[in-house]
Length: 306
Image: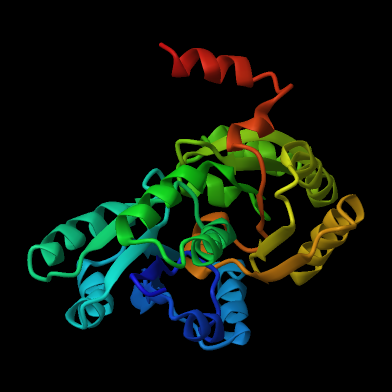
């Protein structure tokens, strides 16, 4: 990019090689494991798998929003060289990282002639990654404001659907009640959720077991796919077998896809979804299209227009 540098937080699924190739910069979130704080930064898949194994063994972990110092450390060297920055942030409805980024941007914009613009992507994981790639492809000659407006215009079409390996992680995160978690565990239910247009985690339906959950996730992708659906991205919480099952199901339904990519769910997001979680991201119709013919869609629409 000639006129700006793309920045992402570490909820995005970028390898070190991809970041170097495309000159992307990353603001790292942090987490605590058994009371000790760590940066959301891993050298290899073995380190990521080790974290999920610890979670599966019962170790306690919590995530933290982006520290303003992390933003400053990442952005100031770039701004000092006169380069503008477009930062793509994890949804403000699931993290305070967007607010932290905005506060830091306001501070640094008063200090440097180069500027930072922050986009609330209202998503995360591979959906955020895909958005970054589209900006790289479509905004080569755009200035910072034009790229920001383009990002705002495209973010609704990046779909993210997911399920969890163990329903207790949704309970810990305050997404469901203790009774629902207990009943769901007893019945082996796998709730399927998605990130709606507002960037909130929204319940879609329950599946009986992971195999049915995988099938339903792929069906929901088919329902919201368009001619722009050229690839699919799957992030997993340490269970490669489940991830490959989902990949095979997606490839069966979409034999003409150019790419179906597999990688670990970034650990800070994985702390909330838990080991065995699965995330399916793709570019398609506006997100709330996955609610069509769903009994809760009418209720949601009524609430929206009150």
